[in-house]
Amino acid sequence: MIQLQVISGKTAGGGIVARRFPFVIGRAGDANLCLDDAGVWDRHVEITFDRREGFAFVAQPGASLLLNGERVQAGKLCNGDLIEIGAAQLRFWLARSEQKTMRVREALTWTALIALFGAQIWLIYALLR
Image (cartoon, rainbow, N blue to C red; front, side):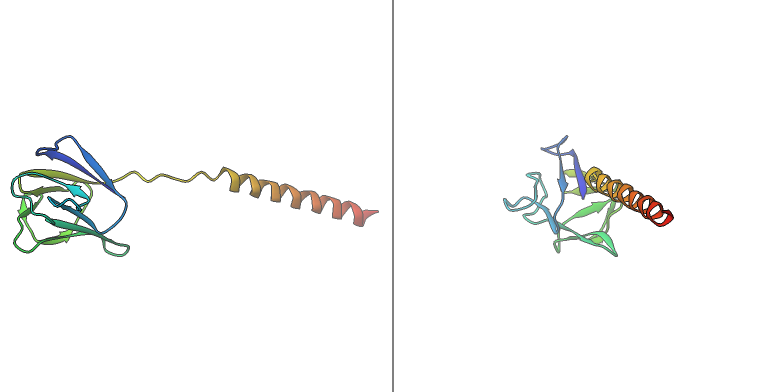
């Protein structure tokens, strides 16, 4: 999961957490993050995720995109990168991961260990009689 924080533009102060990829940023109504700022194209940039490569982006051919102040068309994203799309600036962050609770699994494991220990004690007692 990633988080995109809008730093400047018409929706400054907002942000979105992306859980599904590819993630499209643009002016179009079907874009995952809609930006209605000057210089933003309908499907300006697409962010993808690959387990081996990490997070990558590809800007639409001819679309202007600055990554940390450098004009690029494609590349990899790192935590804290500044993305400039037209008049909008976005900050790329890795979102906090939510850990599932393991209480039920832990309780079942401890119950099984106690039962095994009890069976061993009973077996030793039965053999010594």
